Amino acid sequence: MSDQELESNQSSLEDLSNFITFRISRASASLNKQAMKTLAHLTDLGLTQWRILAVIHMEGQTVAAKVARYADLDKGQISRAVNTLKDMGFVQEGDDPNDGRSAMLSLTEAGHAEYDHVVQTMRKRQKMLVQDVTAEDLETFRAVLKKIEARAQESIL
Image (tube, rainbow, N blue to C red; front, side):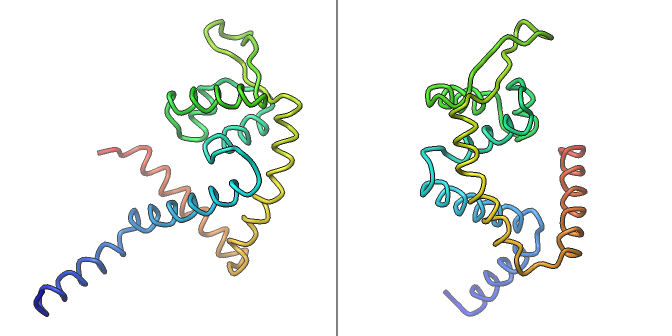
């Protein structure tokens, strides 16, 4: 490869690293890998299952469609993960009094215990990730990320 081709490739990589979407995607991939490794030491739950368990815990009782919207997962992912969580004894389904077509999801006693077992380590992980970030920078980051998420939701090209 010639020096000119190397410089062109380096310039392209530098340009790509300035794309906010590229940086967010890389950060997300790294965070997901780290979360999966952390979970693997604690539980048999996968990352999607953990997130669904956490959302159901937060909501108390909820329907799969609400979990899908909150976690930004498709119905197939939710369905498979909920079935696995049911098989593990962590989630139960009940009738939704507002919609006979939907099932109300809630955690079982074992599901609450599993959540309690995992959440402390995941909270420590969160603290570790931002330990070098000031409270002001973190607040700014959250505000900027919220704006980017909102813009992404409204302007799908």
